[in-house]
Image 1 (cartoon, rainbow, N blue to C red):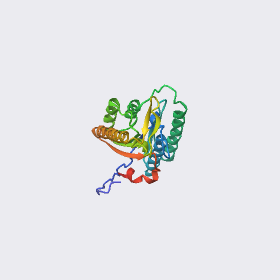
Image 2: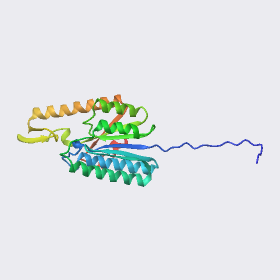
Image 3: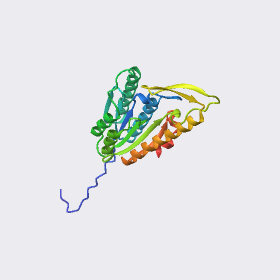
Image 4: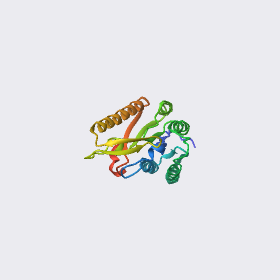
Length: 235
């Protein structure tokens, strides 16, 4: 009934923000010298972010990929979304470990192309990888995603990828990236300096490329438990 009085409707702002995670489990991530493989740490981090989003009431989705497969998890709410993501993380990791001799048919470029289609505007996007496949076409996709979403890059590293182990005598070791093999001489100070500086230069280049894509960069060590690295995740 009309009362002649003025009434005001109050609309509550929708605070839900979709979260989408891209998790790299390619061949270079199947590496680890201390505690965990990089791919396993990436899976732990993906699960942690997923649970955090679910607890806030946000929808969370993921795209998990290896060299041989990819799995898309559409954004869902609460526990069901996280359980689906964790299932795909385990499936993708098991597949990656069992097919290392097969011909790769998925890479970061194709994964980011799929992410452009899946991540809705306004989403909070996490890209978890070692970024060894961050090439020009992959960066183009990332640039397009960052125009509509807030993107954070979480780089998974292994202690051996920062610096060579210190030894008290010269020691030859065979190393491989899965495709090529070399022999390095541990204990050679010149080699150690060159290796350390080349790794620093690589990450400086990665950070520069990501800045151009308006993407922040944080580092997560596969050689340490995530519980000891929470401060890095809060930055």
